[in-house]
Amino acid sequence: MPLTQRGVRRAEGTFSAGLKRVLDSMTGSPAFIHAGRLVILDVDDLGRALYAPPLFTAPARPVNIGRFEFLDLTSRIFFPG
Image (tube, rainbow, N blue to C red; front, top):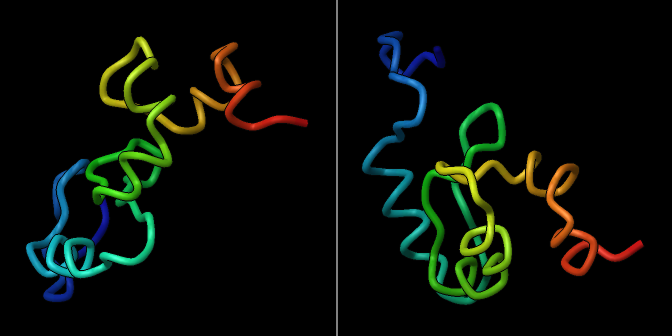
């Protein structure tokens, strides 16, 4: 588990209120918060629009951007090449 600033372990899949405020303040760019294994924990409005395919078509919850990219056929449209 990741350590917080005070050295206390934070549960996987959680993040600080400060990080949420940073995400909410990023109004001009798409952004998301992910856990160590690329599980998407939260997205801002532009991030939700940009990452709509993995967020809304991925069969597994929570959404794992790595699993989507390599195992989901929809990703070939989203990540061409």
